[in-house]
Each structure stands twice: as structure tokens, then as C-alpha cells.
Image (cartoon, one colour):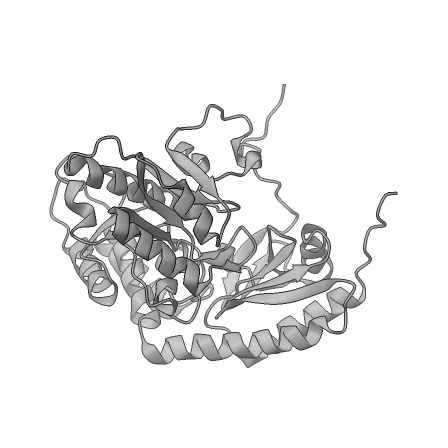
Length: 397
């Protein structure tokens, strides 16, 4: 039996980037691609932002890593900035979104055990969600494709239809510790929760003494035109996971919580060797220098509205292919009438346009937040050309 040096868990395509320039990627063969995937919502400042590059270079020359056994001046500064910018009182830094969600799950359980409710450990989660690839985070999802090969799952999760407040209420029981929800599902197809649903979850959590956890790994960090998507709803969570864009391409994430929610997270309850290392903190600070600005966020909103308007006009030319456009800011989804993956591959291979497939037959359009009108024009030109010469596979009868 042979196996590749890179464990073959990804269906890797023929695109092999070796360099990035702003909103374009360049392959080892010299081909240029317009990147409207941005590393799956990670490279929010593009691929060559001088502020981010400079911050990483300066920190690398000074100090890259020390143990969390020591004080962290760099981590304290970034944590304070996040606390001042959000609902949270405290932050734990991680290396990824899955780790941030793991910390959120532990924080919710620890809260109830700290007040003597040891039987409250179950989280109500929502169908078609994606929370990560660890054992706990795949167990938090109802998707069989992520479960296959890894059974048995961890107990402590109950699945309910997304945006179904009555279903969420009916699922509450004596073991319920809280709700874990993406305000906007990314992998699930850029599906927005309704205001009534999010407001209702907050009310149910308050009524029953539960933790409301938001997974903003994909929809957070200015992606929707707000620093975090919860701001669109006028509702604050107790705990929130964030990652992807927060490092602008450097691996980092964070779990944010109120002081009340974090009461069970005392000395020795959690840890990370690399989490919060000085290099990651420099990257996170450089990202916030750009995106935590009302003018920048307003620009994201405006660019998102222009792009969405053009997409909505565009799909009218191809009623056999497309159904609707949904999303917020620069987190947009183009819902197709058939499986989206072949079309994503067609755009990539034949038109040099990078997008990302998602659930519910959706093409994710998640560009760097620093795109300008010229990038939008180029995107629409490549998308239009791709739709014009795309041939649907015949349906078997």
C-alpha cells in the first residue's frame, strides 16, 4: 500500500499557488487567479498587505514564541483591544477556529459545573452547521460525511433545524447547558439566521440560565460589515469563537466570554502550547489596526452591496443555473439550481476565478475585504464568461 507524503485527506486541485499579490494568487506555472475565496474567508487583507507583513517581520526579529507559563505583554494588549471592541470581558487565544470552538464548549460546561449543575453538559446545535474537525466539533454537527470513520461520536450534543426557534425550545431539557450557533452559516450555504431566531435564543438562554455561544469563525472579523455579525442582531452572546480573518492568514483564533460565562475557567482548566504566541499577537494586532475602524467597515458594507446588486442582476441572465443571492457584506452566497462544486471547478480551471463551494448548492463569494471596484469588475467578467460556457451535466433518467 502506498500513500503520499502529504496525508491524502484533501481532494487537492491543480492550482498550486506560490505567490500572492493583493487579491490575486500566482501559481508555480505563472498563471494568475482572482482570489474571491481568500483562503476560505481568512486572507481578509489580501496576500501582500504591508501593515500585516511588517508587523510579522518586526515581531519575528524580536520574539516568536515563549511558554504561557510566563507573562504575555503581547497577549494582554490584544486581549484588551478585543474586550474593548466587543461584549467580552476575557479572551483565550488559540491557533484555529476548531480550538476556539472547543474552548467555548468547555467554557459552557465549566460554567454549569462551577455553580453545582454537573448534569448540565449538553449543547443544542443546528443542522448543516460546521464547527470544526476535532472530535468534539464534528460531534456538534449533524453531518454524516464528517462522522464517517470516526464513530462513536462524543455525547453532549442535540441537533435542531437551523432557524427553528420552536424546535430549539422543545429540545431544552435537564441536561441542556446552552446553544451553539453560527449567526450566518458558512459551510452550510451562507444562510443567515433570522433576527427573531437569534433574539429568541437569547431570551431562552436567559430564561433557563443557559449559555448562548456564537460561532463566528467564518462570519466574524469585519466580513459582514460589522466587526462581528452579532452586532447586526442587537444581541450579545455569552461566549464566542473567532478565527480565520483575525490573523489575516497567520494561524490564530480566540474564545471570548463574559466574566459570568467564564467563571469556571480558572487555573489549570485549559491551555495551549502555541496559543497566544507573540507572532500571532502581532498579526492579530495588525489586522485590528485596519478592520476595527468604522470607515473601513462602512466600505465593506458598501462594496458588499455593490457586488450583491451586480450578482442579482447577473443571475437573471441564467435562470437555468442560479436561484438567488444571499448573505451580508462580503460574505455572499450564489445559490445554484444544481450542485455547485462542478461550477466552482469550472470557474477555477477555465476562467482563473477562485470561489468556494458550500452546502445547499451554494457558491461562496468571500473575497479579501480590501477589494476595489476594479476587482469587482474583473470578478463579474470572469463569472459571466464562466456561466456563458458552462454546460450542465445531463440528469440521469
